[in-house]
Image 1 (cartoon, rainbow, N blue to C red):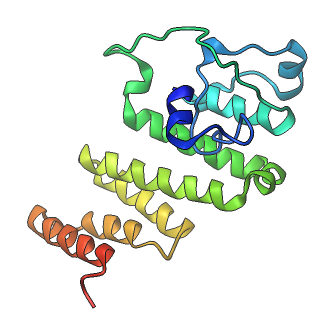
Image 2 (cartoon, one colour):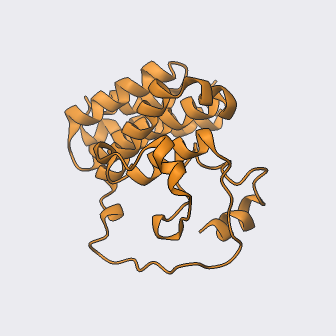
Image 3 (cartoon, rainbow, N blue to C red):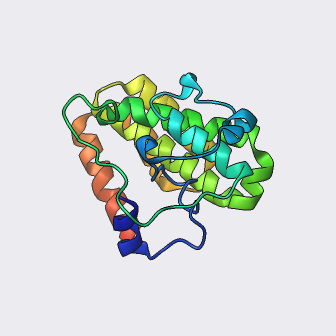
Length: 187
């Protein structure tokens, strides 16, 4: 995965540069000293199934992370992978980002507060979209509200929130208008 990202975006300036956006590290490929875990702590199960990402963020806040440019493990994707449950993954990722914002304010200044807030907004909207698709309207509306609170100037969250109160025909019309607004066709 990291090699694929490097091909798309080029190599990161620092190995942990992508960590605030997503988790590029497979747990089975990691190696670190025990003293590192003694200092930052172990996996926190309240963040499962994204508990590894939360641990990497804590480690990156204290240590430099490096990557080996060779395959160190292989991972098999199958129908029962925990990470295939998108709603559970998004909810866990939301928890990780919220905890990171609440507990690591100094590190956010280093990474860039806008990057973390942008990630939080995207996660709220992505979670709301998944919940709406699964017809869990009340939960979706709660995440749209969180998105609006984080970024009150984005139309994405407002349109999503409004769609929670509309029927399918109205949603289709709203999506059409939204696409036109985004392209700048409506003056």
